[in-house]
Image (cartoon, rainbow, N blue to C red; front, side, top):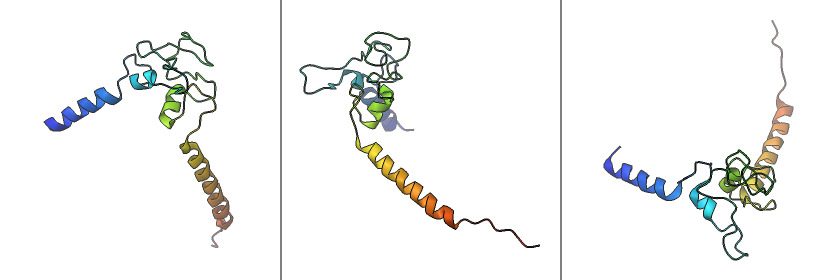
Length: 126
């Protein structure tokens, strides 16, 4: 790896994926405004505290890293919600990927059903 690549990775790393408290959420995610309709930053996560919240809107430590918790109680971890483009403090938030995923799943099931009817086990005659 040359000098240019090393410098590029160091700049990219420091600007996009810093996780100061090592809780599975980037510092950017922990400080972004999650509710633009309310004044100020409505974000329960703290980039300097790995266990600043709990599950189901519990503000306070619960012994689990913030990225692993499910703050809004919708069954998806905070880190996964950020990854999928959801709002981890809104249980009704949605994104485009699950809709595509469901459409893909429906297509796969259809192919399995159609393809399965053609698969017949045949015995060899000896």
